[in-house]
Length: 207
Picture: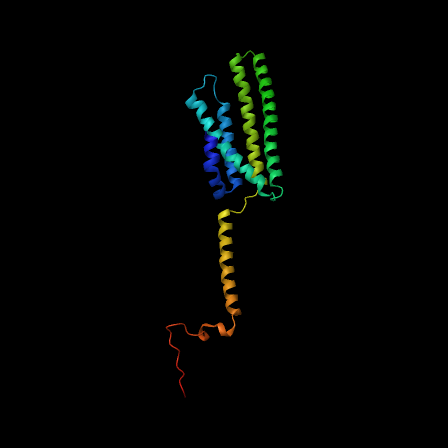
């Protein structure tokens, strides 16, 4: 629910106001914080203390990150390549998620086996395997945030670009009006136009 609310309501407004790069960085930091909280959850975890804060942070971070990633991926696409870029971005996300899940599952299983060999209880060993993977995931997310901070550029703010476009249109209309006024023939000047109905003709003063 947090992912849906943030991605559909808050994320578009934040992207317009602060830029997709900054929103992506904020979302990655929220995800990293959620994974750290998940890595410290005990075996006998309480929902309101150990689970709910992690889920809220994870949902909010995902809701901020996913629209920002798609916006950045589509920002350089031409209208002819928009469909191809969108498909590649979606496919890359799905493949990356599947591979990441497989790698983290294998690492968690290996860590759990090692803890069982050390004489830990099954639940404690299983929880230790999950902790290991959660901390590794948080580190990967932090590295991703650093790479995004160094590599991505902040796009020009849409509001500033829109204000500049309105200024250009306004100055263009003014220049066009001045140009048309300069091109009017002498007979069309207001001082030489024929009088309208109800207007008296000016009298010529004889010398």
